[in-house]
Image 1 (cartoon, rainbow, N blue to C red):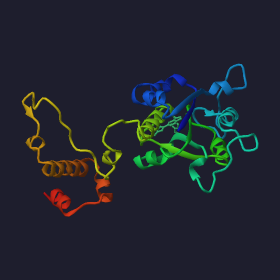
Image 2 (cartoon, protein in one colour; image 1 turned 30 degrees about the vertical axis):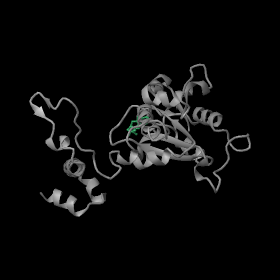
Image 3 (cartoon, rainbow, N blue to C red; image 1 turned 45 degrees about the vertical axis):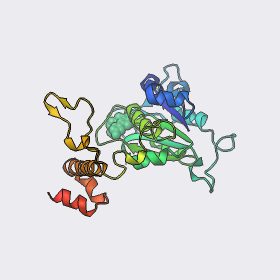
Image 4 (spheres, helix red, strand yellow; image 1 turned 90 degrees about the horizontal axis):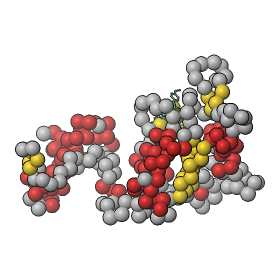
Length: 255
Ligand SMILES: COc1ccc(Cn2ccc3ccc(-c4cc(N)[nH]n4)cc32)cc1
């Protein structure tokens, strides 16, 4: 997989080269390119924004600058660049992800879907966002998704790109090493992960739950499922409605 990020703050994306993500890059599992949007500006002031048509607060990012940046990263057809998707491989087109407060909510299912793509370009907006025509025009030759990472307002798209990139790259084969499979991830069974414990067995007079030291794997699995159900019912009742619950689960929730 290749990830390209376009931003006016390239240093914000430095974490992509650290720790697990950095190791994935070093091992060639993912290639990462971070590009300063100002490299495509046309004026001495390297301006990337302008006042909004129709008035209103703040500034909007200019389509001319973004258009030139995306043309270089994903050359239009006929310029030797990427063409439309092939029927046999719908994921062959580059995917342009534009974080925005107005986007569709990003989910673990999206992370799995993105992890199958060969090429993802992230457009990091600032100010009040990017001129809408950039998305509209890019949609002619790329798959474009405007994505929100939550119902809160950030200052720009860079942090959202770090969140999405981490959620996606960790799913790539070989990135997490011998860690348990993704199938056991939080949300993988539709429920929240329950509590975890490690040594010492007693810490500030607080013992580890006895069942976890019992060696009875069936009993441990049941206890973990019950804790997961209780935590989900308390913190994310919306997830419960979508989860596949068995009779024992319903018994636990009824207690
Ligand atoms: C019209 O309202 C606003 C429009 C833009 C902004 C600042 N801003 C500029 C680019 C950009 C990209 C992503 C996000 C973002 C994503 C999530 N989940 N929260 N905030 C915020 C962003 C603030 C408010």
